[in-house]
Image 1 (cartoon, chains in turn brown, blue):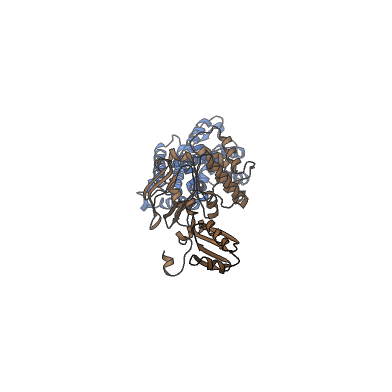
Image 2: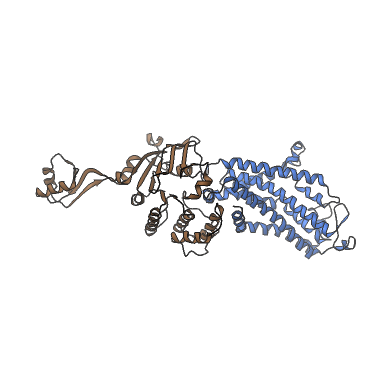
Length: 310
Length: 276
């Protein structure tokens, strides 16, 4: 499989601030990739560099196999993007906005009406009237932003916080839309704070912290069992007696046991006459993984000590 | 992209308001003159104002002289300052650039849209000036001298209406060039900041500074290169024969401003990090 995105030693400094500090990121074609990290960890700057909006201080970017920003004119028509929230000309209607964005780029006006209607239909704005975007709700703007990214049937979708401002039903719709697009062959890359979103949607995640890519891993690996089993039972004392030495932790009726095979553990407990109310292999949540790997976001500024100077 | 820019320009209420206000001021002056009959004596007041009462066909020139020093530069500053900074502040700049629109193409489209704005502004003022002038003051008694509708030039000779029309077209072109120079500077400032207001005020600061330096003898060396220095050369287009040297020099300086300012805008914008 080829990579749709490949960066090598990517660095961006703004004056004395290093926003991105040497990122080597590879995103293979056809997957759904989630980019995570606290505020100010460099996600947006990274995405801006991928799109040629911000010029790298050092390092290389390859997008769809072509060097950026040198080949921007050839690559970007094949990419749909939403960077740091949607934006539109507030005095014009959503449809007029899409027509102008469509007309601004290469490709000519043939089939424009159809393209715009299709994009609006896909994001659930098919029946939109002539109201100016100024009067749109946050959710409608968000949908319009995604419609703009979809206009030219891109091979790669780069979306920053695509579900921002959407209600739970809207979030579900967007998830379905992104899955459908992905299954039709579009590579989807999204950055989000909503770990649940990424958890539900992505095959693979990258975690950024303080300008570095601290993790790049498949979700199946992250979700692999930790080798511990969470056990809920009415008689915890009996469990401790039976599994002497394997019990890691006990609080009330919850016992944490070190054991690789939950099925065998269950059989052993039942054979010993211990009643089991609940038994699950422990898996790390994405939240745990991310919180372990990352520090505070740059939006938190403590008053004292080392924390402030991190 | 140029089509998109023009469409954006013409659908902006602010732009139409600028044009309407530009036309309203001379119209108001014309009505006041017609009602009171109190024209300033020759040599005082705005250029041509003393003459318009006797011939309405001169009113376009008077109207341009009225809006030129302050009003016209303000509208140009507003529109040009908004060019890139406005897109940056609402966020559409990044979406245009990833569409992708080449950065040079974007700047060129912006310059064309500013050009259209200033040309239409000057044209609208001229046309309303003519309509209002003729409606309120008529074709004037000079008609008997030089045939129907003849106008006395500033040098005393009589101009035919066709000659006058040609000269007025030249004036429109010349003033549009002057304003385009200002607009190009505004475009440059607009690439320096994400605030349209800051860019517009920068342009006005340039106009004020230039106007302040102009009468100063000590500034005589740079005087010919000040942006406002040649703004009044268009009056020479109403002399007979036309005094070309000042017009030509003015046009050269203004064209120089357009080139230098656009080059600066391009140099800055080509490698700029778009973080808006």
